[in-house]
Length: 87
Image (cartoon, rainbow, N blue to C red; front, top):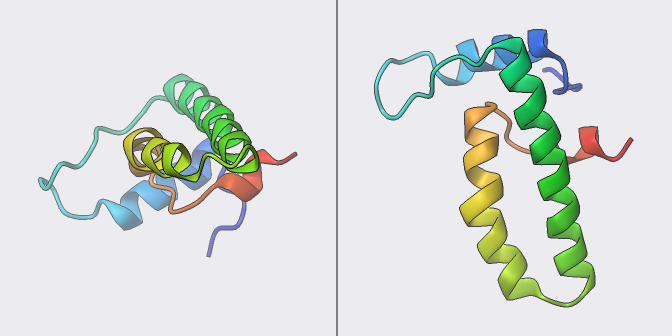
């Protein structure tokens, strides 16, 4: 199992594993530059999510996770990459 999800190589490996079937809304493979930008955006989104939770805005945090973070995680083939964004 891949632990560090922040590398492009790890992304390509996850993509092949998670999106093995064509169709069903499979996103296109990102270029390395697109991956880096979207991964950085995901890390910023995790911070926003943590800030909402810390401020007691659980409903807003849940909505934000479902509508923003979840789609980025799917595009990056990450189940949860928040541990990789705390550095």
